[in-house]
Image 1: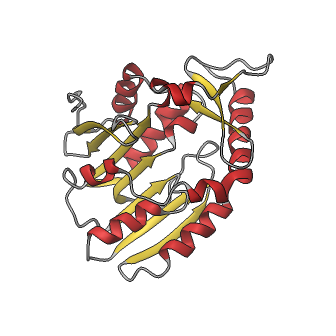
Image 2: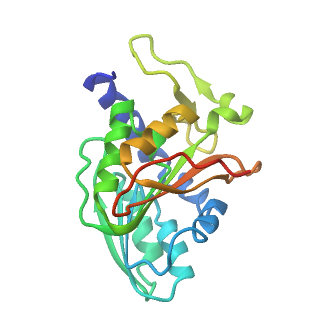
Length: 249
């Protein structure tokens, strides 16, 4: 189990990373992921409310606004004020989106602001330090779902691609991290390191189990190979019980 000191140090590494690279990161995150389009084939649109945990520049909110005419509440949560400012700029003019943004570090507190029909965990689980913290985040996200609502999880499978393995940097000698924890360097503009955890299939199933929800979709998508993220779409039913769904090619 990861101790609190290590967890806070890893979180600080990522806070410093995004403080240095927010504008460059935004420049690389302009397009919707292919996996989001597949998500729309599984969930029931329209949705009336969304919590986007680790929302970054808000592009998932923009994506949803482009795919449903009905108005919805979009509550984006991130701990980087610059990215939240960029999200506000991106989303403020959309007529069918009621915007609520929240500066919150979910590593420090999992308390979420409301209930929603859809909770999104995209690009966030790999930044949560410690297996127990990742489990707790899944449980907290599931608890905010309205009956019939969906939790959409994407786990970044960076370690499976050589271009990302080549960016792994050594840990400081005084840090005791968990299995599949890595430091990756950033190769665009500013030099910076970020903490990333590789969620393998075994852990992925454990995170699903921690949600207590029913699996309604499981697939791989994104990146040049179409395999960069593993998605699981989970639903809160009257008697949710998890059962692994086969990974689609």
